[in-house]
Length: 187
Image 1 (cartoon, rainbow, N blue to C red):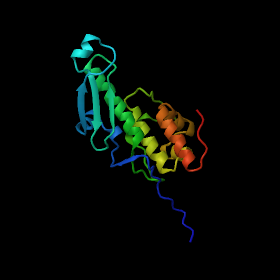
Image 2: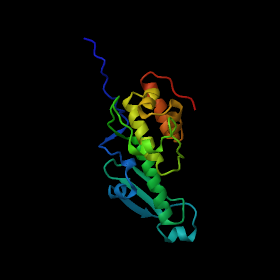
Image 3: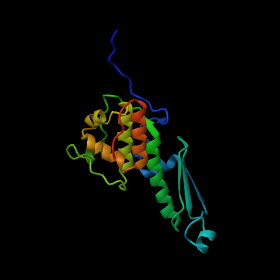
Image 4: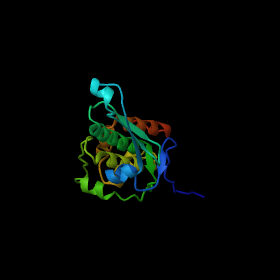
């Protein structure tokens, strides 16, 4: 019996989460799922660094993923940087179950897409959510970037560029491609 159905691929190195993906949540909803800790750390600040707890550490409780920021002198700035780093870490490590062929691009994806292009600066607040959605579909397609690009309505070069903007994501993509016998993408 010839069965053509191939179930979505699940990356064994990822943490499976229920939709919506935590990287797509607005900051208030995401922070309700997190634990914050503030402390002193090494770095610039001199006497201020030794007296004031300016370093921020944030833990996403459902996944256990964490990030920290200690390089700035103000606690609020470090908190903001730590949240941004956590969203990128969630986009990289957490996966929601995406349909191999029946995925419908999110409202954010459709709003950001211009024809077959997806212009987004990696420092933009939407970047982690777009990266998470792209990686969910790429992983479900067994690291097939061209197939994922068709589903998401962008060109393969636009999708690979989106992933390439975050070097750990690009490394993960190439490692996954090699694990299923595909050629790694060039930088």
